[in-house]
Length: 152
Image 1 (cartoon, rainbow, N blue to C red):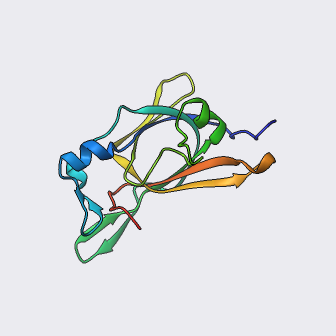
Image 2: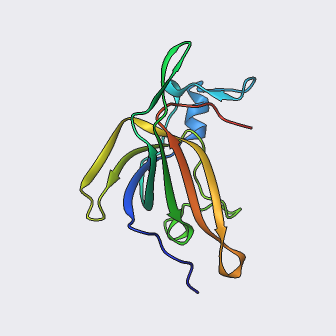
């Protein structure tokens, strides 16, 4: 059964937070439910096909503490490809979470197209697009240039 396809996909390198190692390194504060970005530990990067959408690049807004970067990207991933790569949890949810980070965009041939220094931080993971048979079709990673704490 077909589940659709991505439009003009590229390859995206994602580093997922290693929660056990991060907690051991003192990165997670259980009282405030936040993460110290400088102490986070990451699993080896995974490369996935994604449709890349960019809504703002090198944008900034003024704040009392100085300019705040607001570059924002959305990466749409196909759930069937994540399932084949073992990146879907037993619950059916994608194995991505806030504070994972996107480090590179590559061509389908594997040549670097864009490197993010510092990496983009995932601020939201959305499993969207119920398809045929009631299964999730897509996963959207919404990323910003700056680190954020865990929500919820």
